[in-house]
Image 1 (tube, rainbow, N blue to C red):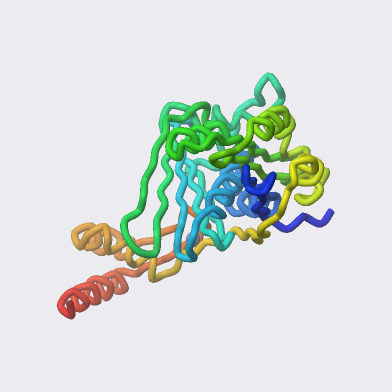
Image 2 (tube, rainbow, N blue to C red):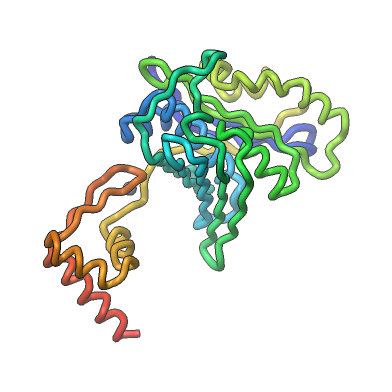
Length: 299
Ligand SMILES: [Zn+2]
């Protein structure tokens, strides 16, 4: 079966009383699974995180803005981190992608167990200009959707309904998510209408397996004046480069680099997000230090 392209719909209900972000991240979740050689549970975690940051990225204003979300819950899979921009370019990484846990009694993958819930969800919004904004909330469950909903409530004072899901078999069968936010002045009638639908979104991954985003939007909201404002194609892509890795190396300081030259005559660095390897010989590290020194003198 041909996989659906990953994409996101930005919508309003009732002329703007509520806004909705709805995304299908099936293809990206499969790519992330292959890239990180991930277990089913870690694939589910990455699929949910991809949907969560895609949604948050779609709410950013300008092209160079970025959202970085990290869940550090102390679980065996280690921290998970997702990055997204308003252009739909997304990346994800998890520290120990091969960690697998038994299914929960309800038959679902134990994402909360793998990530742990003893820690925080950290959201960093960085902008083309100026200081980044960092917000944090204590984890509710490490299941990701509840943790993001808590972030929206505590940090942005916006009541939000958030559901994220990944259905994993031999391949990723479906992945995606939905965020519904009541805007100031939202009527009780609409709040009630949304509340009765909350349970439905608990099975968002099954819904996405059966329907396109448009079909799902129509099925769920047809009586609430749904209006699609924008469709954003989503793409899993890492923006790392040799120049970026050089900057990371230099940020470790000259002493560390000298140690690498002396003890192993070079180093190999791999990008956490795309697992690309970058190798530097001792000579190349020397040149890097020399270049940094020249750049400093130029200033
Ligand atoms: Zn990379």
